[in-house]
Length: 69
Image (cartoon, rainbow, N blue to C red; front, side, top):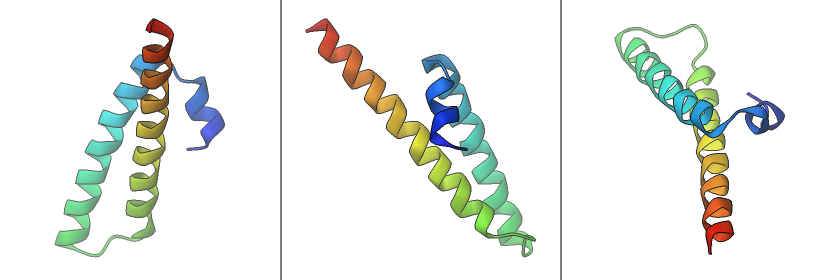
């Protein structure tokens, strides 16, 4: 997921997407533990996507908090 795609999402969509990605990460980890998955770098990509989403969510929360003060 690119940063430009993340910026287009609303805050509610960000929260929903984080949940989806965390579920996907859990499934990938279990699949990899049971047997080797075809592309283990997907785990790293999903982790980085979650981090990008969380970063944008934190930026938005900080921006809204500074606007309120």
